[in-house]
Image (cartoon, rainbow, N blue to C red; front, top):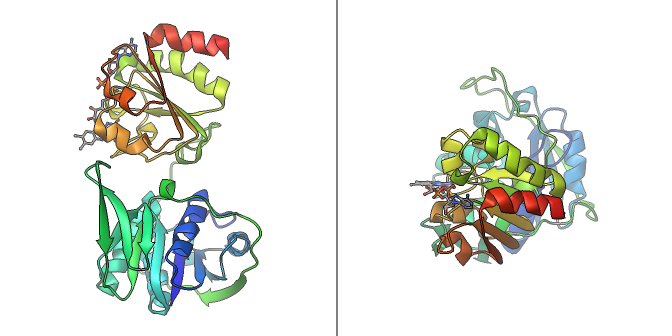
Length: 311
Ligand SMILES: Cc1cc2nc3c(=O)[nH]c(=O)nc-3n(C[C@H](O)[C@H](O)[C@H](O)COP(=O)(O)OP(=O)(O)OC[C@H]3O[C@@H](n4cnc5c(N)ncnc54)[C@H](O)[C@@H]3O)c2cc1C
């Protein structure tokens, strides 16, 4: 049978999460990998998908009903072709997690969530208990509906492929929801989940002003995205969408610098797969040091500005 990857895209370009999901699709070893681009005027995104290495076919479903990525309509589009596939993979992003359960429920199968490894075509690994244990899950369902933790899989090469592109009829609007508006945060910084370097601050920063004064220059120097612990977000020192962790974003950059973050398991669940972890904390017993490659026991209000000066 064949594997279907649901592309994450903005109608013109593919989002990087799609590339990691393609790698997971190939790992399922169940046959060819197809990519569904469900959008409006999405031919460019379809073309981009056709160039991804390892993709055999791209299906572009174009319809005004798919312009705003409404989960009900995207799910209906996936269901229209689902029966042709043994595996349907979504990136475990906000979008993917919005659509996948609808597809699984309609197909009457159990969703397999947040996989980090494919052991075989029916057996997958996924973190549980905030990443403290790995569950090996075997599925007997005829169609496996899966969300993929993108940090668990390398990105497939964005070029080098030459998949056929097929057009499919777009579904009609379900009428179950309608698009009202969207407020998008604008930032010159890299997006948190795609950033190569992340500079993260914790409760120790003490205020939004201090967070900005101390952490922003370091992020600027390194061309990094800014992240934060939940305590810092809850206290209003940093915006919600900067939260890293179990209930925030899962990241795995090349370099993660944590300043004034204790390293609670819920925070570690979101960043411990980073390639190099640097921790700055004045408490040498802080749990963050257990995952850090480089640890600095110091007052961040002195250490971070010194680091900025030295860079
Ligand atoms: C269900 C659930 C989900 C959660 N999800 C998340 C999540 O997604 N992300 C997340 O981050 N948390 C999450 N949490 C919260 C988590 O348990 C911690 O409370 C939180 O991560 C603590 O944030 P912190 O490290 O900034 O603060 P604290 O634990 O208060 O740590 C502050 C640290 O700063 C150090 N420090 C203080 N002053 C200085 C200084 N001047 N210089 C250097 N170091 C200093 C201290 O030694 C301490 O280690 C969750 C909790 C629950 C129950």
